[in-house]
Length: 165
Image 1 (spheres, rainbow, N blue to C red):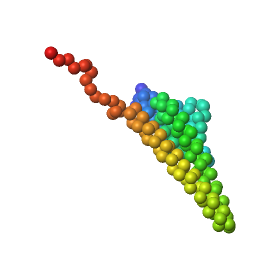
Image 2: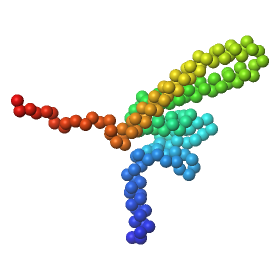
Image 3: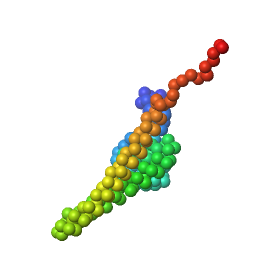
Image 4: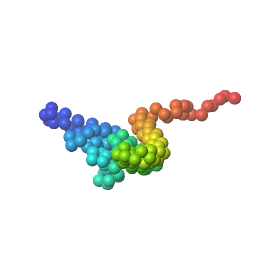
């Protein structure tokens, strides 16, 4: 066997071993995660596919990858919450931008003040959604870290204490 063929054989074998933990960006700009997820950049965000099934559209790669991590590690409630909160946050952000633009274009100062007053509660709600999304993303990071090296496992005795009393 030629050295190049031997190297290629070894590389293919090693690649198969690390695929379940691999996240990479291919030449077309898509992200491939864990051998079964694809994150495709689109105009209004990032579309996620699990195998060939479309999961949803996320607004950032951070949220999309966190969903993949949660799904891979069977944290389905976290995955569902990530998708829901991310979509709510996107809709609310768009709503705030549109209403703020209407207020800015308005020549009537009373209407402008009314719009800005109504936006305050939406801005507060947006901040709450951002915090909730951040918690979900941090939980996914924790799950991923725990998956690589089970640092959180308790070290202890494998046998119960036996005393000679």
